[in-house]
Amino acid sequence: MEAAASTARPGRLLLVDDEEHILRSLRRVLRNNGWDIETAPDGAAGLSLFERFHPEVVISDFRMPGLNGVDLLARIKEQSPRVQRILLTGQADQQAIEDAINRAQVFRFIAKPWNDAQLQATAREAFETFHLSAENDRLYALAQTQNSELRTLNSDLEQRVSQRTALLSRAKREWELTFDAIDRPLALVDMENLTVRRANRAYALAAGRPVTELGVRPKCHQFLFGRSEPCTGCPLTLGALASEGTLELQHKDRTWVLSAYPMGDEPVAVCSYREVTRERQVTRQLVESEKMVAVGNLAGGVAHEINNPLGGILAFTQLMRREDGRSQKDKESLELIEESALRCKRIVESLLKFSRRPRDEDRIQLDLARCIEDAVLLFQAQLQNQPKVQLVQKLERGHLVFADCGQLAQVALNLLMNALQALPERKGTITVETGRVEREAFFRVSDDGVGIAPENLPRIFEPHFTTKPPGEGTGLGLSIAWGIVSDHRGRIEVDSRPGAGARFTTFLPLHAV
Image 1 (cartoon, rainbow, N blue to C red):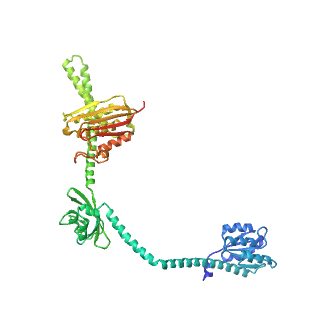
Image 2 (cartoon, rainbow, N blue to C red):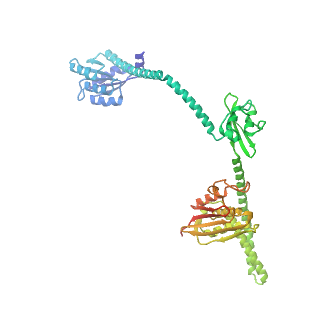
Image 3 (cartoon, one colour):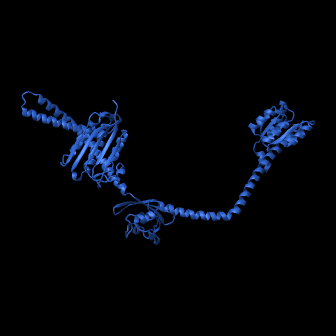
Protein backbone atom coordinates (compact mmCIF):
# COMPACT_ATOMS: atom_id res chain seq x y z
CA MET A 1 0.00 0.00 0.00
CA GLU A 2 2.84 2.40 0.94
CA ALA A 3 4.76 1.41 -2.19
CA ALA A 4 1.72 2.07 -4.33
CA ALA A 5 1.23 5.46 -2.70
CA SER A 6 4.88 6.39 -3.19
CA THR A 7 5.06 5.41 -6.84
CA ALA A 8 1.69 6.95 -7.60
CA ARG A 9 3.04 10.45 -7.29
CA PRO A 10 6.09 11.68 -9.28
CA GLY A 11 9.35 11.97 -7.37
CA ARG A 12 12.38 14.19 -7.88
CA LEU A 13 15.67 12.48 -8.82
CA LEU A 14 19.09 14.13 -9.05
CA LEU A 15 21.86 12.46 -11.13
CA VAL A 16 25.48 13.64 -10.66
CA ASP A 17 28.39 12.42 -12.86
CA ASP A 18 31.24 14.11 -14.62
CA GLU A 19 30.83 11.94 -17.72
CA GLU A 20 28.07 13.14 -20.04
CA HIS A 21 27.46 9.72 -21.65
CA ILE A 22 26.88 8.15 -18.20
CA LEU A 23 24.34 10.86 -17.31
CA ARG A 24 22.54 10.20 -20.60
CA SER A 25 22.55 6.48 -19.95
CA LEU A 26 21.20 6.92 -16.44
CA ARG A 27 18.45 9.27 -17.68
CA ARG A 28 17.55 6.84 -20.50
CA VAL A 29 17.19 3.93 -18.06
CA LEU A 30 15.21 5.86 -15.42
CA ARG A 31 13.10 8.25 -17.50
CA ASN A 32 10.16 5.86 -18.00
CA ASN A 33 9.32 5.77 -14.29
CA GLY A 34 7.61 9.18 -14.31
CA TRP A 35 10.17 10.87 -12.08
CA ASP A 36 11.28 14.48 -12.44
CA ILE A 37 15.00 14.07 -13.27
CA GLU A 38 17.72 16.73 -13.13
CA THR A 39 21.45 16.19 -13.89
CA ALA A 40 24.66 17.89 -12.75
CA PRO A 41 28.19 17.54 -14.29
CA ASP A 42 30.15 17.64 -11.02
CA GLY A 43 29.82 17.67 -7.24
CA ALA A 44 29.75 21.45 -6.79
CA ALA A 45 27.05 21.88 -9.44
CA GLY A 46 25.17 18.94 -7.95
CA LEU A 47 25.19 20.53 -4.47
CA SER A 48 23.99 23.86 -5.86
CA LEU A 49 21.23 22.14 -7.87
CA PHE A 50 20.24 20.09 -4.82
CA GLU A 51 19.55 23.26 -2.82
CA ARG A 52 17.23 24.52 -5.57
CA PHE A 53 15.68 21.26 -6.78
CA HIS A 54 15.07 19.54 -3.41
CA PRO A 55 15.20 15.95 -4.74
CA GLU A 56 14.10 12.93 -2.76
CA VAL A 57 16.76 10.58 -4.23
CA VAL A 58 20.34 11.43 -5.32
CA ILE A 59 22.51 9.09 -7.46
CA SER A 60 26.12 10.24 -7.65
CA ASP A 61 29.35 8.90 -9.13
CA PHE A 62 32.28 8.61 -6.72
CA ARG A 63 35.18 9.85 -8.75
CA MET A 64 34.61 13.44 -9.91
CA PRO A 65 36.90 16.48 -10.08
CA GLY A 66 36.72 18.79 -7.09
CA LEU A 67 33.93 17.57 -4.81
CA ASN A 68 33.77 13.75 -5.06
CA GLY A 69 30.67 11.64 -4.61
CA VAL A 70 31.23 10.72 -0.96
CA ASP A 71 31.80 14.37 0.04
CA LEU A 72 28.72 15.43 -1.95
CA LEU A 73 26.48 12.79 -0.37
CA ALA A 74 27.89 13.56 3.09
CA ARG A 75 26.95 17.21 2.70
CA ILE A 76 23.49 16.27 1.41
CA LYS A 77 23.06 14.04 4.47
CA GLU A 78 23.87 16.97 6.76
CA GLN A 79 21.32 19.19 5.04
CA SER A 80 18.53 16.64 4.50
CA PRO A 81 19.07 13.32 6.32
CA ARG A 82 15.84 11.88 4.90
CA VAL A 83 17.01 12.13 1.25
CA GLN A 84 18.05 8.69 -0.05
CA ARG A 85 21.63 8.63 -1.32
CA ILE A 86 22.97 6.09 -3.88
CA LEU A 87 26.67 5.87 -4.84
CA LEU A 88 27.95 4.68 -8.22
CA THR A 89 31.38 3.09 -7.85
CA GLY A 90 33.77 0.66 -9.52
CA GLN A 91 35.07 -2.62 -8.12
CA ALA A 92 38.36 -1.03 -7.01
CA ASP A 93 36.77 1.75 -4.94
CA GLN A 94 36.85 -0.05 -1.58
CA GLN A 95 37.98 3.07 0.25
CA ALA A 96 35.05 4.95 -1.30
CA ILE A 97 32.70 2.28 0.03
CA GLU A 98 34.06 2.64 3.54
CA ASP A 99 33.84 6.43 3.41
CA ALA A 100 30.34 6.24 1.99
CA ILE A 101 29.24 3.96 4.84
CA ASN A 102 30.88 5.96 7.61
CA ARG A 103 30.38 9.52 6.41
CA ALA A 104 27.57 9.62 3.87
CA GLN A 105 25.55 6.61 5.15
CA VAL A 106 24.40 5.84 1.62
CA PHE A 107 21.23 3.87 0.96
CA ARG A 108 22.72 1.57 -1.72
CA PHE A 109 25.83 1.01 -3.81
CA ILE A 110 25.56 0.41 -7.55
CA ALA A 111 28.59 -1.01 -9.26
CA LYS A 112 29.68 -0.01 -12.73
CA PRO A 113 28.68 -1.28 -15.16
CA TRP A 114 25.16 -1.54 -13.76
CA ASN A 115 22.22 -3.73 -14.55
CA ASP A 116 19.32 -1.62 -15.86
CA ALA A 117 16.64 -3.62 -14.04
CA GLN A 118 18.62 -3.53 -10.81
CA LEU A 119 19.16 0.23 -11.20
CA GLN A 120 15.47 0.86 -11.68
CA ALA A 121 14.55 -1.41 -8.76
CA THR A 122 17.08 0.30 -6.50
CA ALA A 123 15.79 3.76 -7.46
CA ARG A 124 12.18 2.73 -6.85
CA GLU A 125 13.12 1.22 -3.52
CA ALA A 126 14.91 4.45 -2.59
CA PHE A 127 11.79 6.52 -3.37
CA GLU A 128 9.62 4.11 -1.37
CA THR A 129 12.06 4.29 1.54
CA PHE A 130 12.00 8.10 1.41
CA HIS A 131 8.20 8.24 1.50
CA LEU A 132 7.98 5.53 4.14
CA SER A 133 10.48 7.43 6.28
CA ALA A 134 8.53 10.66 5.85
CA GLU A 135 5.25 8.94 6.67
CA ASN A 136 6.80 7.20 9.67
CA ASP A 137 8.11 10.53 10.95
CA ARG A 138 4.71 12.11 10.44
CA LEU A 139 2.89 9.27 12.18
CA TYR A 140 5.43 9.23 14.99
CA ALA A 141 5.07 12.97 15.53
CA LEU A 142 1.29 12.63 15.37
CA ALA A 143 1.36 9.78 17.88
CA GLN A 144 3.62 11.75 20.18
CA THR A 145 1.33 14.76 19.96
CA GLN A 146 -1.79 12.70 20.54
CA ASN A 147 -0.23 10.85 23.43
CA SER A 148 0.85 14.13 25.00
CA GLU A 149 -2.60 15.60 24.52
CA LEU A 150 -4.22 12.47 25.92
CA ARG A 151 -2.00 12.57 28.99
CA THR A 152 -2.81 16.25 29.45
CA LEU A 153 -6.53 15.66 29.03
CA ASN A 154 -6.51 12.74 31.44
CA SER A 155 -4.56 14.63 34.09
CA ASP A 156 -6.52 17.87 33.72
CA LEU A 157 -10.02 16.52 33.20
CA GLU A 158 -11.31 17.29 36.67
CA GLN A 159 -9.59 20.66 36.67
CA ARG A 160 -11.15 21.54 33.31
CA VAL A 161 -14.60 20.58 34.55
CA SER A 162 -14.07 22.78 37.58
CA GLN A 163 -12.81 25.64 35.44
CA ARG A 164 -15.71 25.28 33.02
CA THR A 165 -18.17 25.42 35.89
CA ALA A 166 -16.49 28.56 37.21
CA LEU A 167 -16.49 30.11 33.73
CA LEU A 168 -20.17 29.39 33.29
CA SER A 169 -20.93 30.97 36.62
CA ARG A 170 -18.85 34.00 35.78
CA ALA A 171 -20.42 34.27 32.31
CA LYS A 172 -23.86 34.19 33.89
CA ARG A 173 -22.83 36.91 36.31
CA GLU A 174 -21.25 39.00 33.55
CA TRP A 175 -24.39 38.65 31.46
CA GLU A 176 -26.50 39.79 34.38
CA LEU A 177 -24.20 42.77 35.05
CA THR A 178 -24.17 43.68 31.36
CA PHE A 179 -27.94 43.40 31.20
CA ASP A 180 -28.27 45.72 34.17
CA ALA A 181 -25.58 48.12 32.89
CA ILE A 182 -27.52 48.90 29.70
CA ASP A 183 -29.12 52.30 30.22
CA ARG A 184 -32.02 51.50 27.89
CA PRO A 185 -34.95 49.68 29.55
CA LEU A 186 -34.95 46.00 28.52
CA ALA A 187 -37.34 43.21 29.48
CA LEU A 188 -38.06 39.58 28.60
CA VAL A 189 -41.84 39.41 28.27
CA ASP A 190 -44.01 36.29 28.04
CA MET A 191 -46.16 36.86 24.95
CA GLU A 192 -48.92 34.56 26.23
CA ASN A 193 -49.77 36.56 29.36
CA LEU A 194 -47.56 39.71 28.99
CA THR A 195 -45.72 39.02 32.25
CA VAL A 196 -42.17 40.25 32.75
CA ARG A 197 -39.85 37.26 33.17
CA ARG A 198 -36.74 39.39 33.61
CA ALA A 199 -35.80 43.06 33.28
CA ASN A 200 -32.79 45.26 33.84
CA ARG A 201 -32.39 48.07 36.36
CA ALA A 202 -33.12 50.72 33.74
CA TYR A 203 -36.54 49.14 33.26
CA ALA A 204 -37.35 49.49 36.96
CA LEU A 205 -35.89 53.01 37.01
CA ALA A 206 -38.07 54.06 34.06
CA ALA A 207 -41.12 52.71 35.89
CA GLY A 208 -40.10 54.44 39.14
CA ARG A 209 -40.45 51.15 41.04
CA PRO A 210 -38.02 49.03 43.09
CA VAL A 211 -36.33 46.15 41.31
CA THR A 212 -37.67 43.70 43.90
CA GLU A 213 -41.18 44.07 42.47
CA LEU A 214 -39.99 42.32 39.31
CA GLY A 215 -39.73 39.08 41.28
CA VAL A 216 -43.51 38.55 41.22
CA ARG A 217 -43.60 38.71 37.41
CA PRO A 218 -45.90 41.72 36.94
CA LYS A 219 -47.66 42.63 33.71
CA CYS A 220 -45.46 44.83 31.53
CA HIS A 221 -48.10 47.52 30.94
CA GLN A 222 -48.95 47.65 34.64
CA PHE A 223 -45.38 47.78 35.90
CA LEU A 224 -43.99 50.30 33.40
CA PHE A 225 -46.97 52.54 32.66
CA GLY A 226 -49.49 51.77 35.41
CA ARG A 227 -52.14 50.72 32.89
CA SER A 228 -54.77 48.11 33.60
CA GLU A 229 -55.09 47.11 29.94
CA PRO A 230 -52.39 46.30 27.37
CA CYS A 231 -51.11 49.21 25.30
CA THR A 232 -53.15 49.86 22.17
CA GLY A 233 -51.43 48.33 19.15
CA CYS A 234 -48.91 46.36 21.24
CA PRO A 235 -47.06 43.99 18.86
CA LEU A 236 -47.13 41.23 21.51
CA THR A 237 -50.94 41.08 21.39
CA LEU A 238 -51.31 41.03 17.60
CA GLY A 239 -50.65 37.32 17.13
CA ALA A 240 -47.41 35.44 16.49
CA LEU A 241 -44.39 37.77 16.46
CA ALA A 242 -42.27 36.53 13.56
CA SER A 243 -39.95 39.52 13.32
CA GLU A 244 -39.32 42.88 14.95
CA GLY A 245 -42.40 44.80 16.01
CA THR A 246 -42.44 48.47 16.97
CA LEU A 247 -44.87 50.78 18.70
CA GLU A 248 -44.72 54.42 19.80
CA LEU A 249 -46.11 54.92 23.28
CA GLN A 250 -47.14 58.14 25.03
CA HIS A 251 -47.02 58.13 28.81
CA LYS A 252 -47.62 61.40 30.64
CA ASP A 253 -45.16 63.91 29.15
CA ARG A 254 -42.76 61.30 27.79
CA THR A 255 -42.66 59.45 24.47
CA TRP A 256 -41.29 55.93 24.13
CA VAL A 257 -40.62 53.65 21.16
CA LEU A 258 -41.06 49.95 21.90
CA SER A 259 -39.11 47.43 19.81
CA ALA A 260 -40.03 43.77 20.37
CA TYR A 261 -37.91 40.87 19.09
CA PRO A 262 -39.01 37.19 19.23
CA MET A 263 -36.71 34.64 20.93
CA GLY A 264 -36.74 31.66 18.59
CA ASP A 265 -39.48 29.11 19.22
CA GLU A 266 -40.21 30.22 22.77
CA PRO A 267 -43.22 32.47 23.38
CA VAL A 268 -40.90 35.14 24.77
CA ALA A 269 -39.98 38.52 23.32
CA VAL A 270 -37.14 40.88 24.10
CA CYS A 271 -38.69 44.30 24.58
CA SER A 272 -36.47 47.36 24.25
CA TYR A 273 -37.80 50.79 25.22
CA ARG A 274 -36.19 53.96 23.88
CA GLU A 275 -37.28 57.37 25.10
CA VAL A 276 -37.60 59.74 22.15
CA THR A 277 -39.12 62.73 23.92
CA ARG A 278 -36.10 64.92 23.22
CA GLU A 279 -35.81 63.66 19.65
CA ARG A 280 -39.41 64.59 18.94
CA GLN A 281 -38.82 68.05 20.39
CA VAL A 282 -35.69 68.50 18.28
CA THR A 283 -37.60 67.33 15.19
CA ARG A 284 -40.27 69.92 15.83
CA GLN A 285 -37.61 72.58 16.36
CA LEU A 286 -35.89 71.62 13.11
CA VAL A 287 -39.21 71.87 11.30
CA GLU A 288 -39.62 75.36 12.73
CA SER A 289 -36.05 76.16 11.70
CA GLU A 290 -36.80 75.02 8.16
CA LYS A 291 -39.86 77.23 8.19
CA MET A 292 -37.68 80.16 9.21
CA VAL A 293 -35.28 79.38 6.36
CA ALA A 294 -38.23 79.36 3.95
CA VAL A 295 -39.47 82.66 5.38
CA GLY A 296 -35.96 84.10 4.99
CA ASN A 297 -35.84 83.02 1.35
CA LEU A 298 -39.29 84.50 0.80
CA ALA A 299 -38.22 87.73 2.49
CA GLY A 300 -35.18 87.90 0.25
CA GLY A 301 -37.38 87.48 -2.81
CA VAL A 302 -39.83 90.12 -1.65
CA ALA A 303 -36.97 92.51 -0.85
CA HIS A 304 -35.57 92.00 -4.33
CA GLU A 305 -38.95 92.80 -5.89
CA ILE A 306 -39.36 95.90 -3.72
CA ASN A 307 -35.91 97.16 -4.67
CA ASN A 308 -36.88 97.88 -8.28
CA PRO A 309 -39.91 100.17 -7.68
CA LEU A 310 -38.03 101.76 -4.78
CA GLY A 311 -35.28 102.76 -7.20
CA GLY A 312 -37.92 104.31 -9.43
CA ILE A 313 -39.34 106.33 -6.53
CA LEU A 314 -35.87 107.66 -5.70
CA ALA A 315 -35.19 108.57 -9.32
CA PHE A 316 -38.48 110.45 -9.80
CA THR A 317 -38.12 112.20 -6.43
CA GLN A 318 -34.65 113.45 -7.29
CA LEU A 319 -35.84 114.68 -10.73
CA MET A 320 -38.80 116.52 -9.18
CA ARG A 321 -36.51 118.22 -6.65
CA ARG A 322 -34.36 119.58 -9.50
CA GLU A 323 -37.31 121.11 -11.37
CA ASP A 324 -37.58 124.90 -11.25
CA GLY A 325 -40.58 126.62 -9.74
CA ARG A 326 -41.09 124.17 -6.88
CA SER A 327 -42.34 125.75 -3.68
CA GLN A 328 -40.36 125.41 -0.50
CA LYS A 329 -43.10 123.22 0.97
CA ASP A 330 -42.94 120.85 -2.02
CA LYS A 331 -39.14 120.68 -1.78
CA GLU A 332 -39.35 119.79 1.91
CA SER A 333 -41.92 117.08 1.17
CA LEU A 334 -39.77 115.68 -1.66
CA GLU A 335 -36.72 115.72 0.62
CA LEU A 336 -38.63 113.70 3.23
CA ILE A 337 -39.75 111.25 0.53
CA GLU A 338 -36.14 110.85 -0.66
CA GLU A 339 -34.81 110.29 2.86
CA SER A 340 -37.52 107.71 3.58
CA ALA A 341 -36.89 105.96 0.27
CA LEU A 342 -33.12 105.87 0.93
CA ARG A 343 -33.76 104.44 4.37
CA CYS A 344 -36.04 101.79 2.86
CA LYS A 345 -33.39 101.03 0.25
CA ARG A 346 -30.77 100.45 2.96
CA ILE A 347 -33.15 98.15 4.84
CA VAL A 348 -33.87 96.20 1.63
CA GLU A 349 -30.15 95.90 0.87
CA SER A 350 -29.45 94.66 4.39
CA LEU A 351 -32.28 92.14 4.10
CA LEU A 352 -30.88 90.89 0.79
CA LYS A 353 -27.41 90.47 2.31
CA PHE A 354 -28.85 88.65 5.30
CA SER A 355 -30.96 86.23 3.25
CA ARG A 356 -28.24 85.38 0.73
CA ARG A 357 -26.59 81.97 1.15
CA PRO A 358 -22.92 82.24 2.12
CA ARG A 359 -20.22 81.59 -0.46
CA ASP A 360 -16.44 81.66 -0.19
CA GLU A 361 -16.22 84.44 -2.76
CA ASP A 362 -18.48 86.61 -0.58
CA ARG A 363 -15.64 87.14 1.90
CA ILE A 364 -14.04 90.51 1.26
CA GLN A 365 -12.23 93.24 3.13
CA LEU A 366 -14.88 95.32 4.87
CA ASP A 367 -15.41 97.82 7.65
CA LEU A 368 -16.82 95.88 10.62
CA ALA A 369 -18.93 98.86 11.78
CA ARG A 370 -20.69 99.18 8.42
CA CYS A 371 -21.48 95.47 8.43
CA ILE A 372 -22.98 95.66 11.94
CA GLU A 373 -25.07 98.65 10.81
CA ASP A 374 -26.89 96.36 8.37
CA ALA A 375 -27.92 94.06 11.24
CA VAL A 376 -28.94 97.06 13.38
CA LEU A 377 -31.19 98.36 10.60
CA LEU A 378 -33.03 95.03 10.48
CA PHE A 379 -33.19 94.87 14.27
CA GLN A 380 -34.68 98.36 14.56
CA ALA A 381 -37.76 97.06 12.79
CA GLN A 382 -38.28 94.74 15.79
CA LEU A 383 -38.18 97.74 18.13
CA GLN A 384 -41.09 99.56 16.50
CA ASN A 385 -43.50 97.91 18.96
CA GLN A 386 -41.05 98.01 21.89
CA PRO A 387 -41.15 101.63 23.08
CA LYS A 388 -39.54 100.79 26.43
CA VAL A 389 -36.42 99.34 24.84
CA GLN A 390 -33.53 101.71 24.14
CA LEU A 391 -30.90 100.84 21.55
CA VAL A 392 -27.49 102.48 22.03
CA GLN A 393 -24.97 102.40 19.16
CA LYS A 394 -21.23 102.96 19.67
CA LEU A 395 -19.80 102.03 16.31
CA GLU A 396 -16.17 102.90 15.57
CA ARG A 397 -15.37 102.87 11.88
CA GLY A 398 -12.12 101.94 10.21
CA HIS A 399 -11.58 98.47 11.68
CA LEU A 400 -11.14 96.23 8.63
CA VAL A 401 -11.79 92.49 8.65
CA PHE A 402 -11.87 89.86 5.91
CA ALA A 403 -15.33 88.33 6.19
CA ASP A 404 -18.75 87.66 4.72
CA CYS A 405 -20.86 90.62 5.74
CA GLY A 406 -24.10 88.67 5.45
CA GLN A 407 -22.89 86.00 7.85
CA LEU A 408 -21.54 88.51 10.39
CA ALA A 409 -24.83 90.41 10.20
CA GLN A 410 -26.61 87.13 10.93
CA VAL A 411 -24.48 86.67 14.07
CA ALA A 412 -25.07 90.24 15.21
CA LEU A 413 -28.82 90.04 14.58
CA ASN A 414 -29.03 86.79 16.53
CA LEU A 415 -27.22 88.35 19.50
CA LEU A 416 -29.47 91.43 19.33
CA MET A 417 -32.62 89.29 19.30
CA ASN A 418 -31.34 87.26 22.27
CA ALA A 419 -30.64 90.51 24.13
CA LEU A 420 -34.17 91.72 23.43
CA GLN A 421 -35.69 88.48 24.69
CA ALA A 422 -33.55 88.68 27.85
CA LEU A 423 -35.09 92.03 28.89
CA PRO A 424 -37.79 91.54 31.53
CA GLU A 425 -41.15 92.81 30.30
CA ARG A 426 -39.35 94.12 27.20
CA LYS A 427 -37.95 97.05 29.14
CA GLY A 428 -34.28 98.05 29.28
CA THR A 429 -31.21 99.02 27.28
CA ILE A 430 -29.36 97.17 24.53
CA THR A 431 -25.93 98.41 23.53
CA VAL A 432 -24.10 97.47 20.33
CA GLU A 433 -20.55 98.64 19.81
CA THR A 434 -17.50 97.98 17.69
CA GLY A 435 -13.82 98.54 18.47
CA ARG A 436 -10.32 97.16 18.39
CA VAL A 437 -8.10 95.32 20.88
CA GLU A 438 -4.50 94.83 19.77
CA ARG A 439 -4.66 92.79 16.52
CA GLU A 440 -8.37 92.02 16.72
CA ALA A 441 -11.52 93.88 15.89
CA PHE A 442 -14.65 93.20 17.89
CA PHE A 443 -18.35 93.88 18.04
CA ARG A 444 -20.20 93.61 21.33
CA VAL A 445 -23.88 93.26 22.20
CA SER A 446 -24.80 94.05 25.82
CA ASP A 447 -28.07 94.14 27.71
CA ASP A 448 -29.22 94.81 31.27
CA GLY A 449 -31.63 91.90 31.33
CA VAL A 450 -31.98 88.80 33.51
CA GLY A 451 -28.49 87.41 32.75
CA ILE A 452 -27.43 83.78 32.42
CA ALA A 453 -27.31 81.26 35.27
CA PRO A 454 -23.74 80.01 36.00
CA GLU A 455 -24.70 76.37 35.40
CA ASN A 456 -25.99 77.26 31.91
CA LEU A 457 -22.96 79.28 30.76
CA PRO A 458 -20.88 76.23 29.67
CA ARG A 459 -23.76 74.94 27.53
CA ILE A 460 -25.11 78.01 25.74
CA PHE A 461 -23.31 77.16 22.49
CA GLU A 462 -24.47 73.52 22.44
CA PRO A 463 -26.85 72.70 19.58
CA HIS A 464 -30.51 72.57 20.71
CA PHE A 465 -29.75 73.82 24.23
CA THR A 466 -32.21 76.52 25.24
CA THR A 467 -33.74 77.89 28.43
CA LYS A 468 -36.62 79.52 26.58
CA PRO A 469 -40.16 78.14 26.90
CA PRO A 470 -41.29 75.60 24.28
CA GLY A 471 -42.09 77.26 20.98
CA GLU A 472 -39.92 80.34 21.61
CA GLY A 473 -36.49 78.95 20.79
CA THR A 474 -34.79 76.15 18.87
CA GLY A 475 -31.45 76.26 20.66
CA LEU A 476 -29.66 76.61 17.30
CA GLY A 477 -29.01 80.38 17.12
CA LEU A 478 -25.91 80.59 19.30
CA SER A 479 -24.46 77.32 17.99
CA ILE A 480 -24.81 78.59 14.42
CA ALA A 481 -23.27 81.92 15.45
CA TRP A 482 -20.36 80.09 17.06
CA GLY A 483 -19.83 78.07 13.89
CA ILE A 484 -19.83 81.19 11.69
CA VAL A 485 -17.36 83.05 13.92
CA SER A 486 -15.08 80.00 14.22
CA ASP A 487 -15.12 79.67 10.44
CA HIS A 488 -13.87 83.28 10.30
CA ARG A 489 -11.01 82.34 12.69
CA GLY A 490 -12.63 84.32 15.48
CA ARG A 491 -14.15 83.63 18.89
CA ILE A 492 -17.06 84.68 21.11
CA GLU A 493 -16.59 85.59 24.77
CA VAL A 494 -19.50 85.81 27.22
CA ASP A 495 -19.73 87.77 30.49
CA SER A 496 -22.90 87.45 32.52
CA ARG A 497 -24.27 87.36 36.03
CA PRO A 498 -27.84 86.56 37.02
CA GLY A 499 -29.82 89.76 37.26
CA ALA A 500 -26.97 91.89 35.85
CA GLY A 501 -27.45 91.31 32.13
CA ALA A 502 -25.13 89.68 29.60
CA ARG A 503 -22.36 90.81 27.27
CA PHE A 504 -21.43 88.88 24.11
CA THR A 505 -18.16 90.00 22.48
CA THR A 506 -17.17 88.66 19.08
CA PHE A 507 -13.49 88.96 18.18
CA LEU A 508 -12.22 88.76 14.60
CA PRO A 509 -8.65 89.06 13.28
CA LEU A 510 -7.85 92.43 11.73
CA HIS A 511 -7.17 92.34 8.01
CA ALA A 512 -3.85 93.88 7.00
CA VAL A 513 -4.20 96.49 4.27
